[in-house]
Length: 152
Image 1: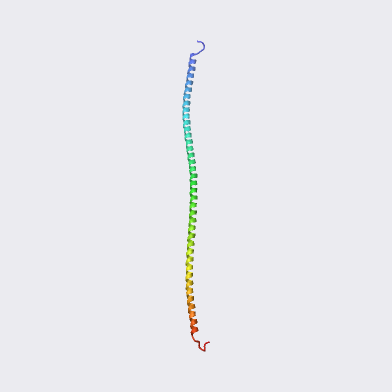
Image 2 (image 1 turned 180 degrees about the vertical axis):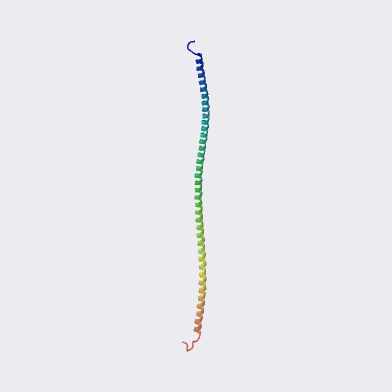
């Protein structure tokens, strides 16, 4: 037996075996930790993807809402413009009817006033004729009455 001590060789092999076992144990722990981290990473990626999808959904919904709001405002503006036109047309028609009614009232008033003036003129003429006739009768009576010598 030259130069190697079997107890030292076996001791060294035992030491190496312990180190291999410790390394294997550390490797298993590192692999388990890596698997946990990988699972957490996958959950994080899935959550990030879900959040991106949710954000995209909200952005699309917001775009649709904005489009709908713009469309509703456009429709409201068209309705308001149409209402203004209707109201303006109605106001013009009512003013036209009111003016026509005013013309009829003025014409009727003029007719009534003219009729009253004619009636008044006829009464006045009749009264004047009566007065003239009465005056003529008085003048005739004065002309037919003998004049007395003391009245002149």
